[in-house]
Length: 147
Image 1 (tube, rainbow, N blue to C red):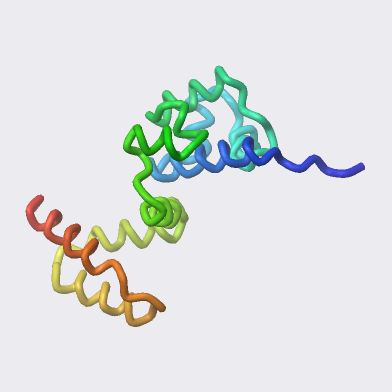
Image 2: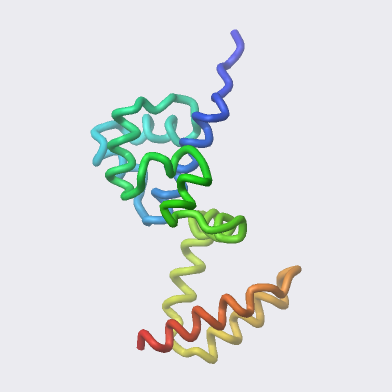
């Protein structure tokens, strides 16, 4: 018997649920408890193995603080200010990863701006691209003005 392949739309919706959950720093257990389901069921939703019903998707949107359109298309999400560009989406996916969250939290914990600059220089020297200087300068300025 052949295993059922997830529908592309179900997989996309599940991916968006996972992305938003991780951006909020919410665990699968926490979200599943809020929804009254098992974390295994949430895993199946996130993988697109199981289809999310309309009422359940409405509840997920409420818990995650997004409009339902966030789970379907870029235009709706962009209109709601939740998705800005391909670069933003790439950054959001990285930050939602385990390593991205850990690296971001560790970097934010560095209070000395000189150390942050040195760490950024090191990361650039190790990476294949040297873009993003303007983004860092804007972030650094915002961090300094916050205190």
